[in-house]
Amino acid sequence: MFYVYSIYNKKHCKIYIGQTDNLDQRIKLHNDKEFRNSYTAKFDGEWVFLYKEECETRQAALIRERQLKSYRGRQFIKNLIHSPVAQR
Image (cartoon, rainbow, N blue to C red; front, side, top):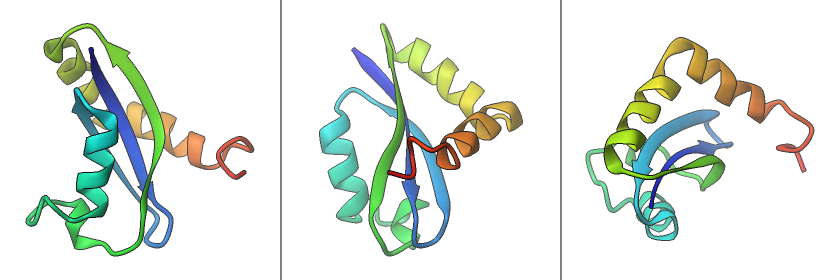
């Protein structure tokens, strides 16, 4: 099973969209700044999961990741930030 996910850094109001086969390990790597030259390593503060989807294959996850990185996909993710559920 693979996952497409979106994480959010509230301190800097930044969103990151990616894909993985291990969500727990991936969020730890982002927060521990293990990806030294990556987008998420540039920002201090905690990254938290905002959204996730399951995909059967890595290929399906990559396709969905590209969709979420499009303008409409990013609008969908941004709407989650402002939803009452996300603000709890």
